[in-house]
Image (cartoon, rainbow, N blue to C red; front, side, top):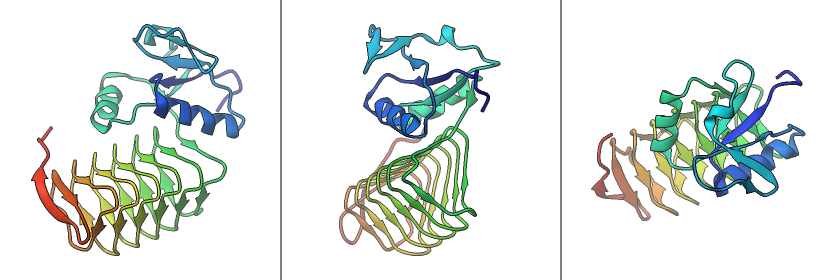
Length: 205
């Protein structure tokens, strides 16, 4: 990152404010928030529209928690995306984090794990060895992914859920908070409980 690059958070929301905290903790200067709402300032930072971004020099992180919205914005905007990792997170040297992804406070990501693009690895999540978290997924606070777990594109794993080793979760699924997943989960499934059970299917994109 060049010292004269401007850094913008796309989305003046609560999620965007946590990303701001991560950037500040890493001593990265933020220029402000991009949002089309009527706000003009949030936590002391200016809010403007995306016409203020220089697509050649500036860098952007999408500060929106909704997985479908992050995917849509990343597809329609040709920005330079950075990844954001809070300094308290513990990452193996052999873990890979994709562009546009954020890793929040006190997360642990172990060796051989791959995190895709525009993912959210939320506060105190634990991701063990050789896991795959595909693009636009959200791993919520205090989730535990044991070794060799795969989380499909756009899937949301709710707070405190536990996924046992070797499980494969399909794309755009929803795992409820506190669920314990002991069997593979198909695409679009909504799973709750201990042990996890499918209660309905999400609408396909």
